[in-house]
Image 1 (cartoon, rainbow, N blue to C red):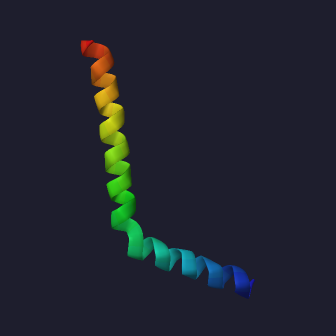
Image 2 (cartoon, rainbow, N blue to C red; image 1 turned 60 degrees about the horizontal axis):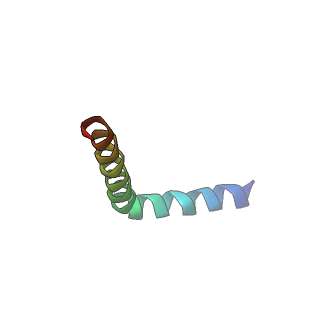
Length: 43
């Protein structure tokens, strides 16, 4: 149980440090999907 809690805290720390990178990747993916969707509507 202690190992699970320790690894969870480590993952939580990584998420806290890298949340902006994750947001950046999610924004790019959303923009690409939105562009493809608009391209199918207009083309």
